[in-house]
Image 1 (tube, rainbow, N blue to C red):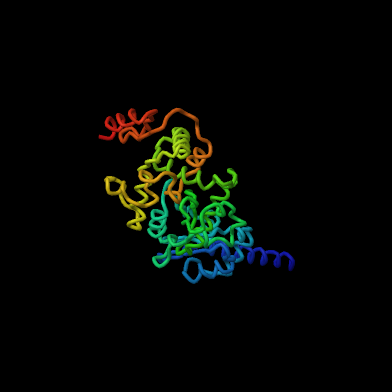
Image 2 (tube, rainbow, N blue to C red; image 1 turned 90 degrees about the vertical axis):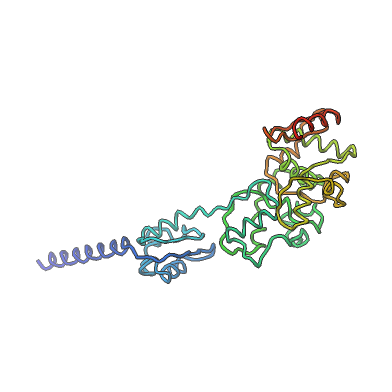
Length: 333
């Protein structure tokens, strides 16, 4: 009889503890609005204390036990979270395990100035920080990790190397950390596919021109061959996109490209591919993978000139200057 009573008492205690436990797990706090940042190196104990301090959970020890019991302690993802409605401990942990889609998309063809604006608009880069002042020489210490940088002039900007893609950056990430993350991505998705030989930087510059001048991806290989042959023959490239970049450098911010007037075409800058033979000193944007592939794999053809139809976005190719001038009158006037 005594053993039976003991069993009943223990069962009642267990049931009481169980309901207390589940009540704590499912109790929803009345939250204030605010952002919670979880950094990559934060441990679950530190995360629990931060959540408790912001009144998102009711007990940090309960949080610790719950994530340990459910093997979630090493699955809590870094990111910037906003809890602005009543939520239980169980729901909070599920959100942290699932993670946030804090993706920032760097579009193909963005230049350094556009990327900087995008980072600051999204509060990733602070107002007193910038990616614009960095040069290749600033990363000499990591040339072994990024051998493709060895081929670029030491005084060149990082234009062309900040690979356009989706990234997860936390608020107020230091500019150097942002750049290293993008160089890692360039190394993985570009440099590992193409040999970092003497033509690598040349092809990257060509890819940046293709990105800005040839809307149709399928036509970029044809245009790549035209640019390479014009370089070899000593014919100026005459690329409007390089003049647009010249305007951007002059104003130190992204500006409207057109109109391109005669004064700009007579500018003494080496980015003026109407006045000077050869390539501009650096890429004029950060090209996507398809433009890079086109620059490394040009398609032989008999054309020497091209222009883009502003209505259809198709590229109009010409074999002779006379034919090209007729196309200018037809499509651009």
